[in-house]
Image (spheres, helix red, strand yellow):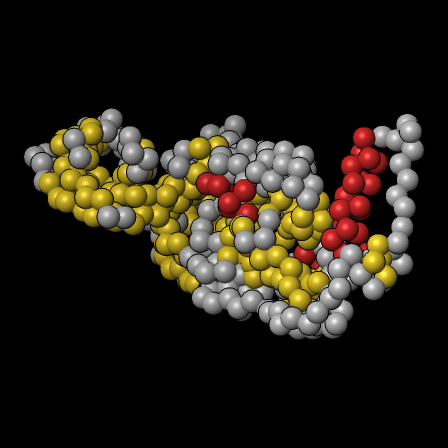
Length: 428
């Protein structure tokens, strides 16, 4: 029985897994009779010649071919092999109808855009404020500029250094992106632009992004040189925060919360009614700096805490906070164009230099006394993946998060990943 290898599965993970299936054709089709005529009925019948001045790479190639032919010099017997793998949860196999991924084929040729029809984490949502209601859609796109594909390779560095095998390869190019996430507002996510340039109608509103619930911690315009025309302020900066635990404490109050099996005793040590209002918290005996609304701090154990709001009067105050917070900072220097900003996004106060952001919108009105409005139509976030070997090599059974640089991982925010499951029998 002739057995043809096919690409087993690649998975783009949502809350579960999105997997990609493929068949191995293309370049390998020209070698469909290999190892014949060099091995006939299990007997090796060939010579491999290496020139006296052959390059090291040629010698190594000859050794690889020799080992391959030696392994093929056997008599075949019928065996029962599995022909597929199963996936479950919020997952997608990387195929589309009868179009399944071939070895060497760019993943984006088979499927370039993922929508809410593919993954639950990309579900459509809606957001309402005093300016109205808009629905929003989410998308994950794969670059067609950096051809991610499955191929046989021998990485020169990284966790699979010098290991020949089949890999999901995601090339790295500093000028190109690997993945793009976008949230797009059908009718515009609108806000007044106050005289302080704060987008008060957007602040405190909530969005679901890639399976996580986030609220807008701060939203502000800036960048203008004019003090009389708010349409000159075209830089938009938005901070999102999502937290496992959200609560309110009175000044002096203590509560205990459990996060990922760890107890956290939180005390509102001090709440100041000065301008700006500030709060000092104690978490398991660790005291924060004085924090204002919209600020976050990372504890010694890596847990983040974010201040949503502070309310005070002449005698006391309350603080609303998030424990175990994930903070995302996006900024675009010109919301009125379609160019990606040079401002690096931040995740939990760490800059992601491999990421870039574009916020699309329009500004209407005039003056600088609250008579201007912003209508935000979309946020685009692009990330270029990089590993120790520049290109990312994902071996069978691994995911992208397993092999990318540690400082890239925060940039892959949300509950998603891409997983490769290797080769599978495609039949006779």
